[in-house]
Image 1 (cartoon, helix red, strand yellow):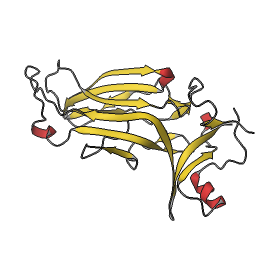
Image 2 (tube, one colour):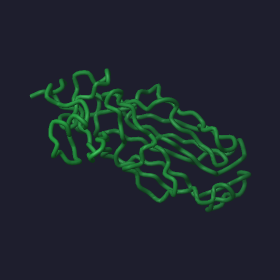
Image 3 (cartoon, one colour):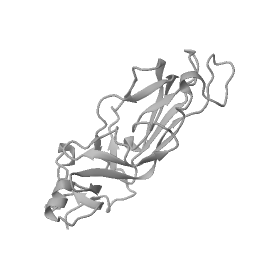
Image 4 (cartoon, rainbow, N blue to C red):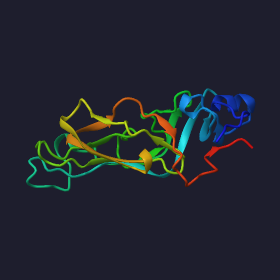
Length: 219
């Protein structure tokens, strides 16, 4: 698949070429090396001072900080206690912001995040406040699903524990669909994990759901 040479590289260029352009879906040709020759469909968030690029996620992407605790791993309670109080809930991402020059996800951007967690989880972040006992399971989760975008994360993307919390642990990472679907399980005594290093998107040639309408070839 080849890029349409007329496609701009950024949403800034979209706005520059058409000052009346409003927020919406556009094709751009990102300068990231792994997308050489490819055009990508993004959502351009337009305003007077800046124009930002987002990838729309057709499938649900969410983090769940469970409202459950089991400090000594002997008596689970359907509530959060101590430092966990008020931290539970779900964060859903409808779109993720990217830098077209690298196709790196801006994990801290929650513009298109929703849910009932007072402080949203960053994209890819998993936390719980379930147990301070080392042998107890972790139950904080984050579900990534980029199917439908024809993009994916590489299989060498991994997660590392956050510095806060007591005895944080990455319990499990599972991958499906060539890295387009990733499930992460982490936790601690009010702790968890986040992606180690940058979350960089790559083309996913095995994503057949949107063969012709996400990454497009030149006419």
